Amino acid sequence: MATLTESRKKALRRELEGIVGKAAVLSDPDELLVYESDGLTLFRALADFVVFPTSAEQVSAIVKLADREGIPFVARGAGTGLSGGCLPSEGGLVISLMRMNRVLEVDYDNQVAVVEPGLVNLHLSWAVGPRGYYYAPDPSSQQACTLGGNIANNSGGPHTLKYGVTTNHVLGLEVVLPDGELVWLGGKTRDPQGYDLVGLFVGSEGTFGIATKIVVRILKKPQAVKTVLAIFDEIDRASEAVSAIIARGLVPAALEMIDQVTIQAVEDAFGCGYPRDAAAALLIELDGLAVGMEAQVERVIAACRECGAREVRLAKDEAERQLLWKGRKSAFGAYGRISPAYMVMDGVIPRTRLPYVLRRVNEIVATHNLRVGNVFHAGDGNLHPNILYDPRRPGEEERVVQAGAEILKVCAEVGGSISGEHGIGLEKMDYMPFIFSPADLTTMHRVKEAFNPRGLCNPGKIFPTRKSCVEVGPAYRPHAIEEKGLAQRF
Ligand SMILES: Cc1cc2nc3c(=O)[nH]c(=O)nc-3n(C[C@H](O)[C@H](O)[C@H](O)COP(=O)(O)OP(=O)(O)OC[C@H]3O[C@@H](n4cnc5c(N)ncnc54)[C@H](O)[C@@H]3O)c2cc1C
Image (cartoon, rainbow, N blue to C red; front, top):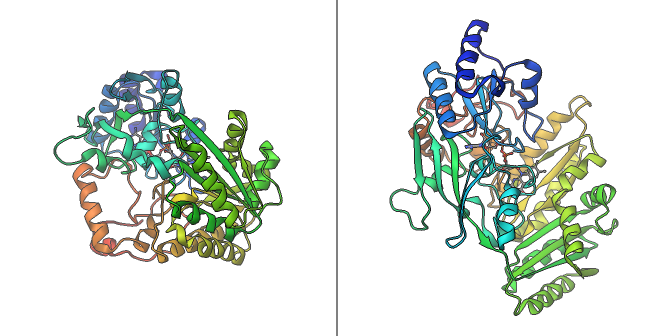
């Protein structure tokens, strides 16, 4: 939603061009449309300007200008976020970091790399790969998403089960604070002193400032990697196998589940070799030392068979392994074969509750007369029900949002959470009370105010302050923090 008068816009455009150059400022409505949404297309909002800085100093100058003028601003990486996090929900500036995409330094001896925030996740592994290293957090969007977006959302991926999420791999950050000041949080060493401000910043969804340099750990590639595909005729039995594998003391690098709806979409799109009639498939990856690897694979296969797998197959070579992973990692895109649109939910549950929660997901979606495909990080109980819908059918979007809310409520009720890795953004801020008390939210709000006292940096996110064009979502009810005057709805 544009918020500025034409004359003010002209003056601002001149100043922005003075900082980043004429070709790095967009304000034409047709061009702004490209930046009106992220991967969650249910929500849309137009900025007044999109700017493309190429250095931390330029980011700082832009933010100082926004601070002086009282204009909201939001950082944007690749726009693959799935919670509306990078939307300019109050207009103002979108600061795209895509031109700041260099690997600045790699210290192989200390296994540390310094990168710019617009670097695409996979490109870091490509850069260090020839020397036998890689960057572990691997969101399924890793071919497009940026390290800056990963930092903001504390992104995970299939290999989170063994290697953790982004925060476990970040040592230091250069940050432009919301008043434009440039500071360093953490550094290159593993045991920093003082408050863990890096830990605080990672996962703050772009509301604490803009990361302009990122220090990450890089890992040695494992000696051996084995990938197993297990096929089940009942989804409950596949869910039981997930717990059975981990109960044997094995820690797979990845343990992913794909249901029948998703298998059929993936097979239509890519032909990855998943049997179309299977109720569910588990993709299980083991990595580590070559010694003992065969024995671990055998134990995984035995656990799957005991849980009723009708077929268990070990990828025979790297090409087959890549094909199996292509099916998993491209599953979201494959839904395009079977539905005009989908909304990805991102709940977390204790993995022992998988059979119950998956049944509830199917019941809820059916009640709303919708379809769902599930493809998710089963090993760490991070569900991704993908609700399929057609936005052209009147009322369907509302039913999708309602079904999504009910699913997240179930996740919260079984002791889980409303987001594993996609962030709260615009999408889930009204659901925060499912898992946080008013006192919890007030504490979080105080931390936000310490970094972002004027609220200009990515406003209208995380806390229940629904505003502007963001019209979809459950019915309004005042939240405790609104009643206390800490947040406001419009
Ligand atoms: C097909 C698909 C698969 C996905 N799979 C996964 C998955 O497996 N795991 C997972 O965790 N996510 C996944 N995602 C979600 C998404 O890719 C991640 O959240 C990713 O980290 C977003 O990165 P981005 O560069 O696209 O960020 P954007 O969408 O551009 O922004 C995301 C947030 O980061 C903030 N931000 C961006 N850059 C900076 C910066 N430099 N400093 C401060 N804040 C910043 C933005 O303001 C916003 O709040 C998937 C998305 C898609 C479309």
